[in-house]
Length: 190
Image 1 (cartoon, one colour):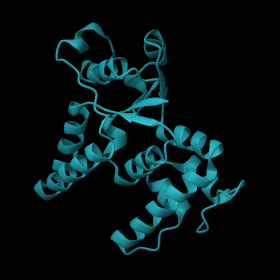
Image 2 (cartoon, rainbow, N blue to C red):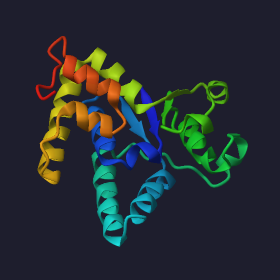
Image 3 (cartoon, rainbow, N blue to C red):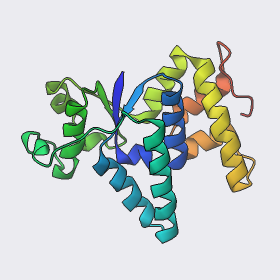
Image 4 (tube, rainbow, N blue to C red):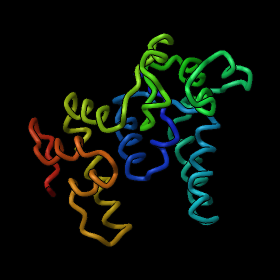
């Protein structure tokens, strides 16, 4: 499954690390445009110049990890699409040009399902999408979550639980699944 990832999913670190972590496991093929990556960098810049530098470094790393993920979108391509927020048309254009099956976003109101269906696309939110991947392969998703949890603990110095970290990352359904386990998929720190 090819999924176009919106900037609002790439910018929060924990969410991005989980989404891209499961992509590294081969559970789906991520896609984005150069403009989406630039939006990520600009969002980080709002926290200061140092954060923009960090984000740009992370972007280079992500581009290297997924060399075929970036979809070229000519400036004229987005004009043929309609969305409630004209600034999001490039996301739809990238999804169509990248032969994607879905757009992953937190921004449901600006990506109406009926408009996306006309283009053969689904809209998925990260929590529901990751929960579905966990149901299909709990071991792989749990392994990624354990790594993200360990890194969050290391970077913050806080003793996060998986449930609290997922809740903060706006992934509560995934957090509940990870704690409840089943089929070998429990992360041991509720």
